[in-house]
Image (spheres, rainbow, N blue to C red):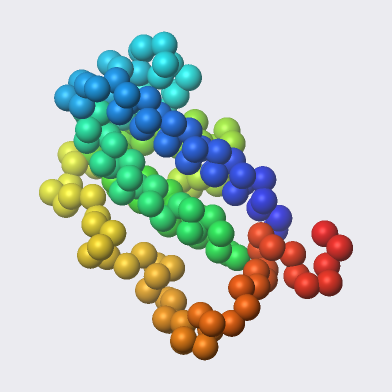
Length: 172
C-alpha cells in the first residue's frame, strides 16, 4: 500500500502541533486553560486545541504533546508504518480521562487519515494514575528492536536506502 500521502498528512499535523505549542508559549500564560486560549485569534485555526480536557493548562498541554508526539518523526520514516503506535501515544498522553475529546480528535484526524485511532481501546472517563511515559525510561517499540551499529558501520559511507530515499538505479 502506498501511504506517502498519509505520512504527509501526519507530518503536517505534527507541524501544526508544534506551531500551536509555539503560539501557546508566546502567550506567556502557562496556567491558563488551553480551551480558553484557543478562542484567541492566533490559536483559532487549531481546532484540536478545543478537544483537550477543559481544565488542561498550557504548560500541561505542552508537556503532554511532547510526550505524545516524540515518536512520530522516527515512526514516519520507518518502512512499515506502525499505525497503532502513532495513535496510542496521543490517546494515552494527551486524552487520558477525556473520552469525548479523544472521540472528537479521532474524527478530526480521520478526515485526513482514515485509519487514525481505529482499533484502540476505549478511554475511561477517569485519567489513569500513570503519568505520561518518560522517553528516558521506556524504549519505543522501534528502539527496542534496533541493535546498536558497529563502529565499522559508523565509518562507512552515508547511503540512504529505502523509503523515503529511492533505491540505487531507480528512476523515481
